Every structure is written in C-alpha cells, then in structure tokens.
Image 1 (cartoon, rainbow, N blue to C red):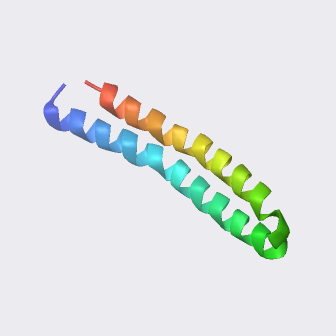
Image 2: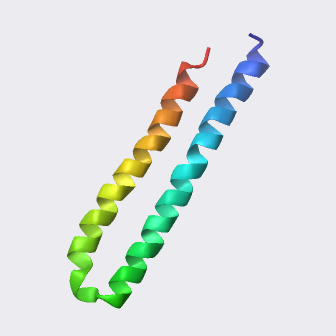
Length: 72
C-alpha cells in the first residue's frame, strides 16, 4: 500500500472510532448530572454507575486505537 493510503486509513479508523465513544460519554455525563439534580441523595450510586459506564465506553475508543495501529 501507498504511505498516503495507510495514513488515511489510520486516520479514518481512529476518527470514526472516536465518534461513538465521544457521544456516549457526553450522554452519560448529561444524564448523570440530570439524575443528581433530581435526586442529590443518590449521587454516590449515580457516580459509581457513571464511572463504570464511562470505562466501558472508553474501551471502545481503545479498540479503535488498536485497530488504527495495526493497519500496515
């Protein structure tokens, strides 16, 4: 493959692979903030669930990064 084609493939892999996790983390943060605003006493449980969900969403972005690095 040509070097420009490889670089374009890597850029598209990480760029498109980061769109979903970016949206997901934004939605998680928005909903957690909304839930804490409605029920401040439950902020501890909401925070734990939010952090766990954010970790799962971030793993998708890491998979995209690994795919981008594996393109030769």
